[in-house]
Image (cartoon, rainbow, N blue to C red; front, side, top):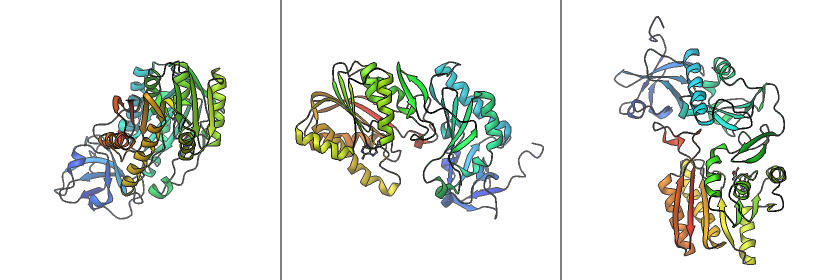
Length: 402
Ligand code: SAH
C-alpha cells in the first residue's frame, strides 16, 4: 500500500465504545457508530477509528446489516484484500491439516470457521472432496472472487456448492440461493467418523448436511454407552445413536426426529453400518413422543438430547431457558437410576453457566441426583476465539443420574 491504507473511508465510533474493538471483537454494531461516509457500498473497506480519531482496525462495511462493520485486520499496514484473504484461508486449512492430516478424503471437516479463523461471515465445510461454502456476510460476499480462488488453491475441491442460512437475506441484504459454484456433489457424499460411516446430503440436508461440531461429543458419549438401551432424541441422521452402537457397544438405540428426510437418511446410515437390527427410528415430535413414553412407563439407560437452537435473539432467551428446563426435566423422567444423560444446547445466547443452571433446575424439578461428568464444546475444527465469545455456542454435558 503506497498510501499506507490512509485513503480508505473512516467509520468513527461513538465515545466510550471502542474497548471491544481494541480487544479484537470483530462485530461493530450500528449503535456504536457516530459517523460513516454516506453511500458506502456493501463490502467497502473502511478504517475504524475511535471517537478520538485513533486507528483501531480495518473492516468491511454493510449499510444493511445491524453488524455495520466486520473487522478483519488490526494492522494498519494490512488492509483487507487479496493477500489477507489468501493468508487467512491458508492458515485455516493448515491448522485443520494438523488435526486431520493432509488427506481429507472420506472425512467431514470444517475448513474455515468464520470469526474463529479471522474470516467473519464465511464458513467452509469439506465432505470428502466436496466444499460447501456458507456466506453469512453480504460485505464479505463482495470479496468472494479472491476468497474462492484461495479456497480452490488450498483445498482443491472437486465441487464447490453454496449453502445459505435462514434469515441472512433479511439480516444482511444478501440475496443468495443454494446452488453450484462449480460442479455438483453426489447425493449422498460418504464420510466416516470414529469408524461409523455416514451418508451426507450436502445440498439438501440441514446446515451443510451434517453436524460436524458434535463429532467428538458423539465418541465421548459412546464411551458411556456399553450395554445400554439408548434414547437418541433429535437424532437427525443418527450421529449419536449409531456411534453409541458401533464405537460404544450400546445394546439398542431408539432414535427420534421430526424431519422425514433426516429419518430416511438415518435409516440408510444404520443399514450402511449393518446396525439396522439394533437401531430403531421414528419420525415424531420429541415432546409428544416423550409424553407417550412416560404414559407407557418406559425407561432407558441413557438419553441423548440434542435439540435445535431454542434462542434466536436476546429477547427469546427466557423462553428458551424455560423450554430447555422442561425438555431436560422430561428426559430425566424416562431415565433409569444409574443412567447417562447427554444434553446439548447450540444456542450461543445461552451460555455455559446458564446451561449448567438449566440442568440443575431440571434435576430439582425431576427430583434426581445429577452429577456432571464432562462439560464439552464443539470439536477442534470449530475453535473458540477468545476475542469472540459468540463462537462458544455449543454445550454438551454428559451426566450421571441417580
Ligand atoms: N443429534 C444430531 C443433530 C441434531 S440437530 C446429530 O448428531 O447429527 C436437531 C434436530 O432436531 C434436527 O434434525 C431437527 O429435524 C430436529 N427437530 C427439531 N425440532 C424437533 C421436534 N420438535 N421433534 C423432533 N425433532 C426435532
